[in-house]
Length: 337
Ligand code: GLY
Image (cartoon, rainbow, N blue to C red; front, top):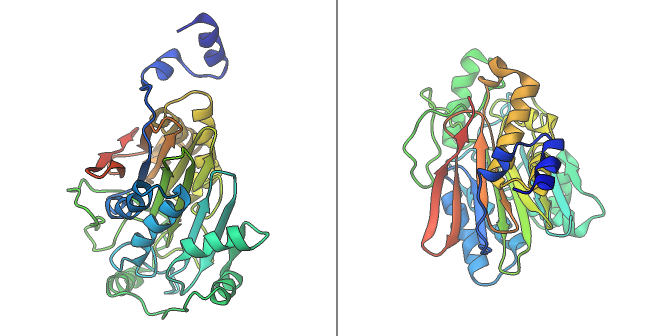
């Protein structure tokens, strides 16, 4: 590494080791799509259908996560765990290659919050709509108002939670698990512990987009909103640099503007994996090691070369990577604690 480059990196607080330990290949890998957790495998398939036919990354990331939102046995969409008052409330965001973005938060009874987020982006002068207003907008746009009945799994989990009604903001502490497609892990007490699908993609034209959708933390306080619909926290795309998304304890992602931070680290020259690692380190530094042991946060990212990476606080996070008809696979996230 040249001396001047080394000095520049040093002044940014980055070590030569960090820079050189993630090697770049010269060929650009595109299209490519990556998404969080095991459920990302099925979501990637839908996104890949769009990308492999020359479609736009924006359409891919919307259609990809819609698969997970439709699932009734996952912690995303209307089948997911409710808040502590027994209502499922949904958050979602989407962002394209031109800094256009849209999001919805605290949205109830709408099956595809990601598509409402896209309509906010495309049809309103705003970036974010919440609660009743978001629902009114969705209905006006033709989205059907679904039943507020809980799915069978969510009902069982809620009834179980009600026995103690403990408010414990601890999510995504994963058990070691066999990774099987479309099978989010269950805790020993029967509750699902995946909370979010985040997806970022680059299309054949080299344009990036991202999406993020969640029911948020199970049994959260009514009105709680996590990182997923917050642009810069749960999702960020800069078409010159790369795209990143987050999963896990939203409050801690919001505190450090996590996905924006990952993209900024990539702008400084870091490989996506190294960029995600540094964002995770920032959370641990802010929160302290002992408190960080109680939570999970995972970031995933891609850059303009089609390189990808992910990192998390502790063991158990994985993400799905797809860049060819026969290449859609899970990667275990490296972890710090
Ligand atoms: N990461 C999702 C949430 O905290 O709501």
